Image 1 (cartoon, rainbow, N blue to C red):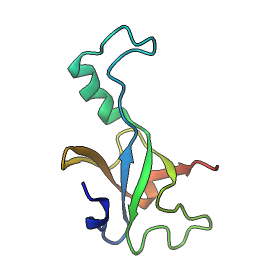
Image 2: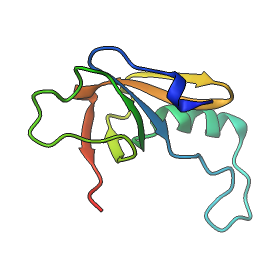
Image 3: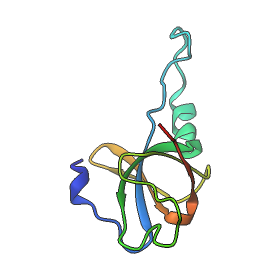
Image 4: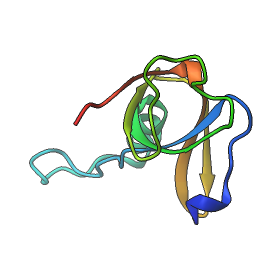
Amino acid sequence: MNESRWEPLEFKCIVKPKEIKETSDSGKIYLAAQTIDTDKYKQEEGELIAIGSKAFCDWPVKPEVGDTVTFDRYAGSLKNLDGQDYRFLNDTEIVAREIT
């Protein structure tokens, strides 16, 4: 997906969730497809890809595009666009950003 061609409206944000591992940490056990699909809905962290024009307007600290953010487990809508999963969230569903 060409991320620049999507512009969230108003208070919405687009987050690209972190990739789901298809093997265990040891790399020896492959996870079932159903487990991977379930884990997609449980993701809580990702990269902020786009921010709507009114998002974070009254926040003292504003996340920026490219920041790693944390959001509520089942927040927003999970959409698959051009083979990549994205989470469409309201700005209030983002609960923290990673400080680097």
